[in-house]
Image (cartoon, rainbow over all chains, first blue to last red; front, top):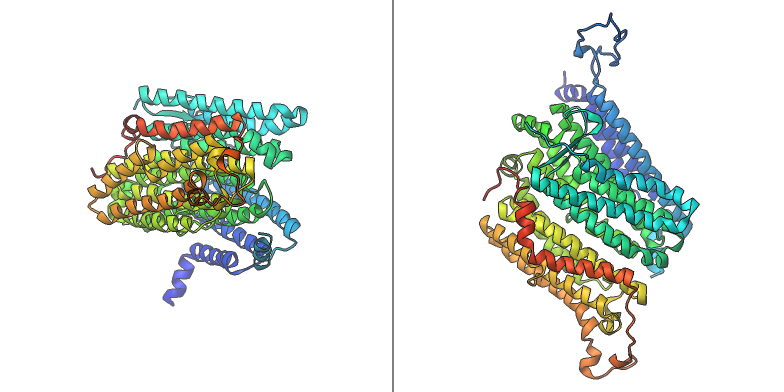
Length: 133
Length: 504
């Protein structure tokens, strides 16, 4: 098979996250509209969250809940390989909360900017700030 | 291993956190109680960190296991002598800025005092948490608590600050996202998030590409957070447009804490042998610091706005800290950490002065500071002390940290850095001396053409109220004391906290 295609399939999660990250990066740097910048920032954050979650993916594994694991007839020996590592999910859950908070703060700022200057285009905004001294 | 457990590390974090969420409720019920309550919490946090520092000196590092879960599974809080120093610095500065902020907030953002103090305490929570946590992911959460509250604080006054705050949000989030990515990579190869555990596992994995990528993302992320040139673009706007008390707080703390995290991970989670010898990150950082020192100072000279000038000067001073860390020898490390402490005090004092001038006169342009030394003698005196410390005149603190940095550069055999340190100090003399000239000896006096300006005798003395004056003078006294007792700071905090494996 084509070695490039091989690499892409082999590192599917890495390729995906870098692609998404670059899309976000482009939106943050290349767009002049502040809302588009914010969307870019979100894509950037989510790309990393997706990547870290993908680290715990495992073929044929299941959720780390032990059925009938309590009481006297509990299965004493567990194969860790059968279960997905839950920690990256939990960490990223926290990261998602942080991301939501960041988006909230940024949206609140955008509201204030729009109220004060009546625009969210960066070039118009800069002209207005310079104009007012 | 005998581990000294104590609840102090987590108490320092919990006191401001709980108060931050109580204040809005208290504000609904009885608004005048908000400021005293906030200040009490800050004083208690300060007391707790003094107690922690004493314990660390007697018994060694303090540990606290969150929920009783021992590391590496549970979240650990840990205070060693380096973090004790940072905690003392942070809590003392937040108390002083807290006292100062009362009148300043009443004047600049009168209707926002309840949210201001609530977010202020949240920011303190993030700052002390960053310093005392020993868990990489917990550190990310505290990093974002600090950043989110500083975005809110910067924008609280409205005006151009909101646009600066938005720019800060975008760049700050990129920095934090890079940090998160680096934690993800580290977790993927080590399966651990505890710093002490990581430092045990990592040496066997130094050849791994994932560790290299993690380290690279970490350094870039932290460089954004501490505004290392050329990733400083968020800083001048955020510092210059924010309300005065916020500028003083953010300038004194947030970039310093990011520098602390850089040191903690570069030298304690990774070994100096990795971050200095295996990949040349340390020397790269030192060179970037040197560039920041020169260009930051040059840009500061070009400014006409007082606060914007101070902000660019911060970019230069971050360069000193990073240069010291990047030299990666004991002298340079001592100088870097000492400069971190000194600069927090000096820049806090300078921004407090800027706030006092705005409070009394509303002036921000340097060339309009005509004879402020007559109108506001104590404010001008504070400025003089802090400016002398920035330039590096003994016995002020700035002199000794620069001395250590120069000794470190000589130890490293790099004379270019020696020249750069001296050059940047001369440039600091240029931009700070300019302000001193307008304050004390304006041209109009020497040429005898007073023109439309009042003569010195006609200017009424009208300094800021004592609640603003006392914190300013305390910071100025701190700057001098840090200089006089620099041996104590180095001997008690920095030398015991020296990372193992640094070059002499």
